[in-house]
Length: 359
Image (cartoon, rainbow, N blue to C red; front, side, top):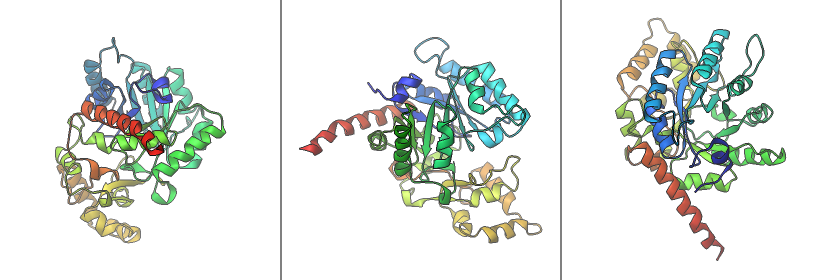
């Protein structure tokens, strides 16, 4: 039986959280993570469509009834700059909180926001509806803001993470960053649960995070490579391919520089970077922001349209597969329940073996 601040505060049995990955973390994946004892978050993303979140919550509720062991475990994650980008957007988030009453919500990019009129924070709004608030931060400045904003848990996201995060020049490595956030908690005599995120795919990573003083970990890439995850099946298989190694992962601005030209909700600086597997698009343009900008602005340029089409069709010679630096240790696309359970058991074994090092 695990006993950490995370399991105690959030009433879960395993110190593992599913990252709310847009287009990946739906109701089924969240439910199976919960069944395995972890915290399963459904991704609301920008919350541009209330219908989509309604569908995923419905799937979750069918798999996790309102009564029983996991009844109060619905968790929803939001991308701050989109979901809280206007007065109307705030109203949509509040509607979700009021209608579904999730046990917890997560915010990221930014983690703390204020209503454009009332100046109420997203944390205060969520607390009004009885939701615990988890925020994901990538810098010391963000962490300091989180500590004084009365959040219920902080995720320390390192640059090794897949998907969106701070540009590498503004972020930190997972282990060093998580350790520093733990130190900040001690300096403030706080009891806020701290979770590590970025490059963690197995029980060794969970054990390492706990040894640093963290209370759990967040899994993204590892749970994308699961049967229940939404998204392209070929992308999942690529994550588990022998060809996908840690040094193939790069944190780059290229993808957002392209997609921001056509997205209705462009990613803002300094969150406009992703951890992804190298491919011809990234290799061609990484480190060449000015040249890429010029190419995108050329008359009759088809670069952005080709990328958008490749994402829709699953052509990963052009479109990027988002992944964290632990991808080399992902060997199969498995069932989410088994993935969470195996990582939990492996971490226990690692921890139980450590006393041998003391002679």
